[in-house]
Amino acid sequence: MTTTPTDRDRTVRDELFGPRRRAVTVGIVLLISLVAFEQMGVGTAMPAVVAELGTVADYAWPFVAFIATTVVGTVLGGRWCDARGPRLVLLLAPAVFGLGLLVAGTAGSLPQLLAGRLLQGLGAGAQGVAVYVLIALVYSVRARPAVFGLVSSAWVVPSLVGPPVAGVVTEHLSWHWVFLGLLPLVGLAVLLVLPAVRGLAPPAEPAPPHRGLVPAAVAAALGVAALSWAGQHPTVAGAVLAVAALAVLVPALRRLLPAGTVRARRGIAAVVAGRGLIAGAFFTVTAYLPLTLTATHGWSLSEAGLPLIVGSLGWSAAAAWQGRRPELPRLRLLRIGMLLIAVGTAGLLLVAPAWGVAWAALPLWLVAGVGMGLGFSSLSALLLAGSSPDAVGHHSSAAQLTDQLAQAAFVGLGGALLAVLVTPAVALPVLLVVLVVLALVGALIAPRTAPQEGSLPSPGF
Image (cartoon, rainbow, N blue to C red):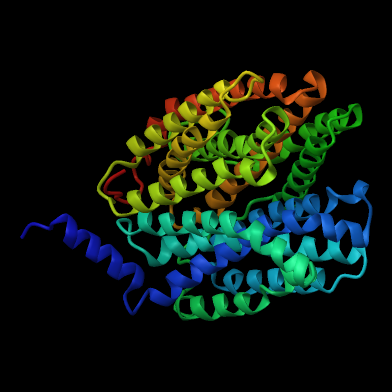
């Protein structure tokens, strides 16, 4: 009997939202959405937070604190999941994240706020990896593209509603409720995933121990945090700190990332490298595009956010589309996605200069958003397809660490270019050229991301 596309869609939909999986699917989306909303909303509320608890000089520290412990949580959560399964992490990580919300939401001083941000980062990092491991355990290969489409939407929707909601809450209630208001939803998310978590058994063959993992995780956390701080302070001191951060990061990453990641060796190393390339190219543009439109073309802040909204909608739509077509080759979708990001970013070279056409940013970033929806979701599916059961946590943590490192490095590069070349109209075209090259390299290595021989069968990859 031939299976029609409608039958396949129904099968995948039933696996995601049928009686056995509905709660865990909604729980996964909610867990990711909470972290995404907090990251997006805190940026809007932070001026009010710093005005009450500190000074402008303290502005970067709440972000740096979150980034640092996110790295530690990502690495240690991945290791625990491989050794003992994701069960405990899926229960404890949201609890730690929720405790961080409580500590930050009741903060009356900057040190207490930073303590809350440290706890939030630790919980968010471990939780993100555990969700990937849970997806690998409970969903079939055919359903995973659709799951990752939902995960993408869990990031996209908060990027649209997070800042305005956080702004309204801060103005009419208090910035404290940007943190405290999410606490009930953390409990709800845990209750939803609890049935699936109860049925998880420890791995039949736990991963072998990784010596030196904890020191490497701490070193990576300090290095990534220092890069992020240096990117927000493009001074001589920032440049010196960036060099020192790289000196700490390089040996740490040799232990934390799969061998051959820098060379994009065929298999999982190329997937992890691809995550860094796609995150570095896309998210760096989203950090600087509003600056271009406001400083160079005189747009208001609300107007400058429109291309980001359009890009987010393109990302969400493309992620949902690829999720309904599990039979399509992920390698081809990845290459197309990378090329679309390259096209959208290259087109912004006609926007960034003072003589540029500012409105073109809207369709161009829609193109890049579609590319992100295809590429990022495909990389997530390829990551699971190329990982043995005892390595999903390690590989997921490596991919997320590469995301964080790439964003810190290239946003920092943009800050350095602004410090040297002074105006966005001059500095950002240079940055855009670098980011176009990143996306093109991602398209070039796409064939290398195929699962190596010996991996589990992966239709459509």
